[in-house]
Length: 185
Image (cartoon, rainbow, N blue to C red):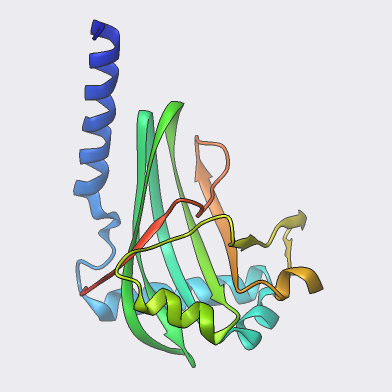
């Protein structure tokens, strides 16, 4: 193993440990604090992306992740916590974690909401001990300024992801490959 490779691996591991230690500050005060952040995130969506209201009305459930922190230096990862809402009530709490490896460096924060459009998709998510978002998740795109909406084809997908509020030095944000695990805040 080359000295550079070992140093890169150790730096990446240290970045992951620092990311895990920060814990985003979400959940440190339990479910009440997390629910407050989820409410604020949904309010932000309603105000800034009114096209998502239609998704919320049609969804049978939604997983709201108010803050995901992602960092990398060769090896990267992301982490955040959120709540699963059914009929506007939080029924479960989840963590989201993602790991990556490659030529990458930087950090960013963002939020996302997974809209479960079918009872089957929601039931599969809730029954899984660790559900991973894959290629079957449809993304809603920001196509013109602040206009975020779903077209007719998108609404037919079982799970729709809306990623928003990106801030930082990494380009792009995606939920593909993210593992969601039920937690007790």
